[in-house]
Image 1 (cartoon, each protein chain N blue to C red):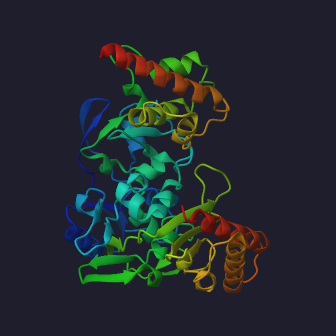
Image 2 (image 1 turned 120 degrees about the vertical axis):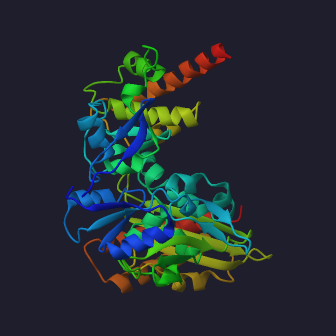
Amino acid sequence: MTRVTVKTTINHRKYELAPDPNQTLLDILREELGLTGTKRGCEIGQCGACTVLIDGRAANSCLVLAPQIDGKEILTVEGLASDGRLHPLQESFMDHDAVHCGFCTPGMLMSAKDLLDHAPHPSEEEIRVGISGNLCRCTGYVQIVDAIHDAAERLGKKERIEN
Amino acid sequence: MKPFDYIQAPSITDACIAAAEHSPAKFLAGGTDLLIELRRGNGNYPRSVVDISFLHELRGIEATPDGLIRIGPLTTHSELSSSALLRKNASFLSSAASTIGSPQIRNRGTVGGNVMNSAACADTVPPLIALGASVTLQSVEGRRTITLSDFFIGPYKNIARGDELLTSISFSPLPSVCRSSFVKLGRRNALSISRLSVAAVLGYDRDGRIADARIVPGSAFPVWRRAREAEQMLLGEEPSDKLFTAAGKRVSEAMVSYTGRRWSTEYKEAVITILVRRALEMCGRG
């Protein structure tokens, strides 16, 4: 098994990596780059704890072979904050107590980011569908749905001010 | 994951050559089934993985000059769900794709993978069978096109050889007088695998009588097939609850006669009757 060369952008930074082809994107993030915000859960694409964005769309990083990210842009929870400020989703997750044990939170945030990037004013049903690939065993989802709803409003307000 | 040779194919031809030279090979598209298989590591572990996920020519949905709809096998379930062309010409295929897995799975999983994996619960297959879709397979030996109803031979089994690459799925658009639907019963709402599903099409003549009827249940027969017995009884009739329930019962009887009685039959035979009725109701004129 020969190593392959992978050129990729992770959290806005360019990388040239040489993974073993049987490593997953999740392995690379956690073991090679120390980006342990992305969690290793079920490893069969059911729990969503390992969710990251690939070219802006949510994906289970446990189901992506490392060579497949060649030329792609990856965003993990570590890349959500910018200029030392938390992303509105992160702020509203804290304000709504949408984090209990915290294991599902990075994946939840990334699914929510994909949702709000593509549907800035989601209904409650759309939010529930948006996070339907992320399991949480603590919160009962209510606070998480509230937090995403609130983040959508904060982002809308921010956009209006900036314009 | 056990080791394997990884080959990134820069073209369809290269993918076919790699699969022939490094046999047994597995093609990697969205990876949502293959990675789970590789991690499990049992069964026929491949010597090589041929990555076709970078082949843009295998992606996308288009209307061809000869009046067909052509879907590239790397088109994701998310893309099927949001395609205006499909919503107009085969809306139940979009609906079926939107029920698969989770957003993360739909963003990666592909229609080609769904077809080639050939699970009895593959949700894009019942609509594709109802559409009379054909698949084109390519290998170093050439190309062949087969209708999907001749393609599957059993659960997780189809007639494609290991070195044959699916390069196209095509079908005639539904006539504008037709309505289509897809209903699915899973054990839960999200990330659910079909316990039973039904894809249905009804077309009407000028007098409002049924002139085209297609019913394809999923997870019901050992090999996918149209429920011709039930379709026949709908033709020439006016739509009614009684008729749709009778058609559902006919599908249920056919299912039992093909599969025999198993532990789940008592449940499935009642439920498929209702799912067929619901699917047909959703194809009502409107």
